[in-house]
Length: 153
Image 1: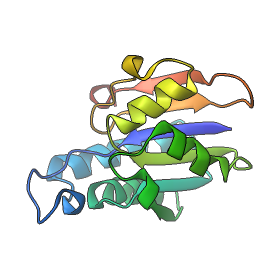
Image 2 (image 1 turned 180 degrees about the vertical axis):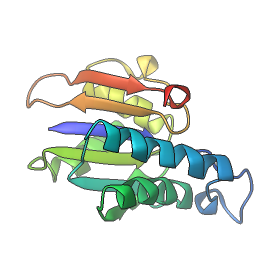
Image 3 (image 1 turned 45 degrees about the horizontal axis):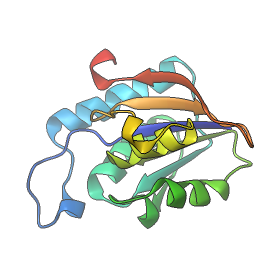
Image 4 (image 1 turned 30 degrees about the horizontal axis):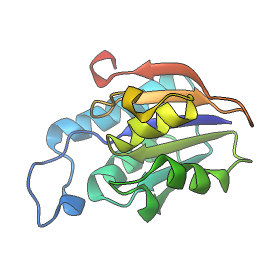
């Protein structure tokens, strides 16, 4: 299974709560660039999972609309998600050839480190709107196929 990990795009600094912070104009542009990148390289997830925070849902929706896919909101992917939680939840979808998970840092970095067999202290640093592609094989560490920081999109 291929797993795409995408950190939400740039968000406004203030809202009624952290969970309600929407994307900034820059963030909408970043999310659009991610959608273009996936379309250009014909990377098509079969399922889009997103933290239920507004900024992640907006990022995921921009990408999903470009790929004609729905977004599945997941409270388990909110800030504070542990690698163990994510792996358990992602396990439900093992039959899917390619998943896109839109989430938060440092959670995505910790998840990537765990899947790659690295300690969490060696997590990937996901800047806003950065994308990682991991290949998952049962019983083996994941393989990092690509890591694209936002500034390279």
